[in-house]
Amino acid sequence: MSIKNISIESALHSFGLAGVQTQTGNLQVNSPINGNPIGHINTHTETQVDAAITQSKLAFEQWRSVPAPKRGELVRVLGNQLREHKQDLGALVSMECGKIYQEGLGEVQEMIDICDLAVGLSRQLFGLTIASERPGHKMTETWHPIGPVGIISAFNFPVAVWCWNAALALVCGNSVIWKPSEKTPLTALACQRIFEQAVAELGGIPEGLSQVIIGHADVGEQLVNDARVPVISATGSTAMGRKVGPAVAARFGRSILELGGNNAIIVAPTADLDMAVRAILFGAVGTAGQRCTTTRRLFVHQDVYAELVPSLKKAYRGIRIGDPMNENTLVGPLIDEQAYQAMQAALSLASNQGGTVIGGERTLQSEYPNAYYVNPAIVEMPSCEQSVQEETFAPILYVYRYTDLNQALAQHNDVPQGLSSAIFTNDVREAELFTCATGSDCGIANVNIGTSGAEIGGAFGGEKETGGGRESGSDAWKGYMRRSTSTVNYSSELPLAQGIEFNL
Ligand code: NAD
Image 1: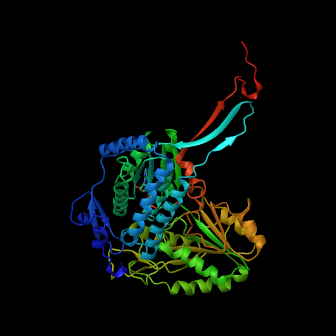
Image 2: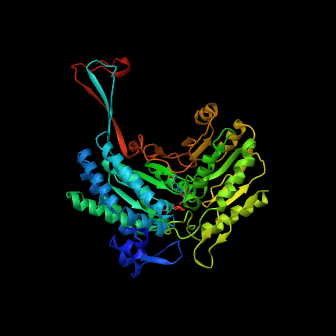
Image 3: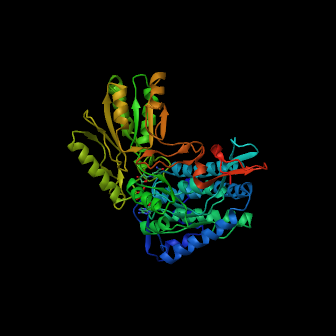
């Protein structure tokens, strides 16, 4: 379907959700495009959440015995359903969270990609055979399903985060319960419809294998505190992770935390500046600066500063801001007024600290009085020992000048977060230094690629206050399983490990 033919009505209709526009409910959902309500739904009560967890446990107890490649079948069908719904779901993402339609499509593509990865994985949940020190003994390590997985997600990736977790959790033999952001519950309900279609197509799937619970932080807290949910994967701010991490640990559960970032790019003297400008632009202003991997800090070598920074400012002047459903738009709105206020506060602080601010003003106010569109900001910062320490979830790029790479690296790492990072250089020594043990301390360290837009094949996540969790590719699936070490004695003796003699 062409972008011109997709309206909020048609997008909701294709998921059987047209009713949310007229029904009453205690949760009002607004579109950041114009600030107008697009639906009302009800949040789940404590009793309903409890019942969902009970059902999830029952579903898990059946699903864990289904052979993993059969579990993969469900995820394969889910991926195909997502292919069919790519345009509608991409549009709904755009309308509910404000990212441009191309990025909405990209988010759904990420869901399809992780489904493909998970289907392959369903035949590769490999364990180990380990050499035993005892004769006639065999030692193995096996991975088993662990139980219901709770997924808490943020507004800015309203659908992909669910799928990164759910596709893996499902092939690993678990049930899932999803608490989406209270700002983007409709896309979650749309995903639930798509999942239900996959279930209906395949048949024989336990009831309640994947469920959605709607609500604010209190609904998330109930999930977090319930010992029947052994794994909690929580994506959102560091402030949220600070509460969720200890609460899950207090009941000896496992958490996968995907929290805030304060990502930086270093531009070295040998960098391809044209490529660097394009990467910085996408990284800093894409999704209106509301990606966990958004480029927030830039360290530019003094030899290329005079060329790079003016080119970047020129590129910023060409950014087309507006309705994210318009094909020409590159930057849509901020999620809400609170995000706009946080951006203004960060800019005045930077200005008070001697920074030179370009951009950052509200725009399109007369056309959209209830929505918050901003000109992305560049802030040239005076030289200082420490760069900005906070993540402000808005398009602000702090620019620093450097002379020595080791000193730039030290500043780069001297922040509480550790998600994504990049260096632009054609000097192999600098590239290797950046990615080696003493280089970037982030979960993602790129060379000649920006900080955002990771592929699903690698493990995704970051260190320090980013939470340490890993999702998506590589061996992230192990986070959704329990490990069992088994030693089988096929001899007629009973030798003890470490050669201990214990004879009567
Ligand atoms: P948020 O922390 O406000 O909310 C995230 C989710 O947590 C929501 O569903 C919310 O209801 C829930 N929540 C909040 N407090 C809770 C509690 N005490 N117990 C249980 N659940 C609770 O985040 P947001 O504004 O929606 O998203 C933006 C933030 O998310 C940014 O900091 C961004 O960097 C981060 N983020 C990180 C990643 C990543 O992979 N590292 C990805 C996307 C977003």
